[in-house]
Image 1 (cartoon, rainbow, N blue to C red):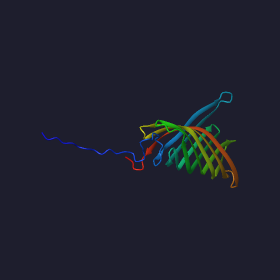
Image 2 (tube, rainbow, N blue to C red; image 1 turned 60 degrees about the vertical axis):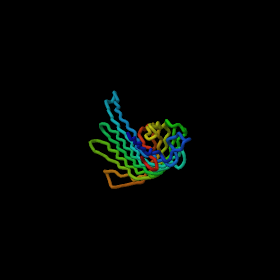
Image 3 (cartoon, one colour; image 1 turned 90 degrees about the vertical axis):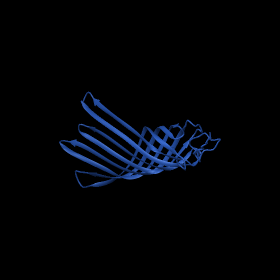
Image 4 (cartoon, rainbow, N blue to C red; image 1 turned 135 degrees about the vertical axis):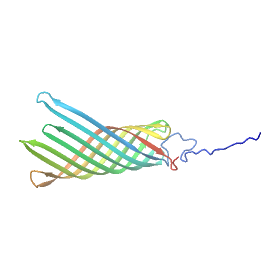
Length: 212
């Protein structure tokens, strides 16, 4: 009986060398989505005043490893918060875009502690509404400025392709805003310095320069 032998080419990652174990290696791309979300309610039992707050942040980013464990790319994120009670409401939105650098400290194949820095441009809008003596007064602050975002966290890698990130974020913005009110047509320029601290989580994909 004749016998036949079939061979199959094995597709390998062109960025991986025999002596390398880190998934964060030179030539690969890191792309993904991270975010934060928060919600709460508060009640003053003496005044019977209740308030509700909601907050979320979404970030999309991509970058390439120029050397092992050093990723340089671009990120964009949006934040939105809302705080309201019986007499007032405060809503703010921030959009940020800028370059981002991330460094992974460990060469381990299961993941690494990392830190990232991202300077860039921010757009901000805030609406503050209050009910005063049966009259609704609304103030609107809008404008832009410089922002600086930083993250310290841990990235856990699954099968050399997917990373799950947990991070502690500190963001600060310096903004020049135009302030308007619905009571009159007067406007004025104000300067804001805003900062916040938050936790984030998300998934990212590690891609070869020649994706499988």
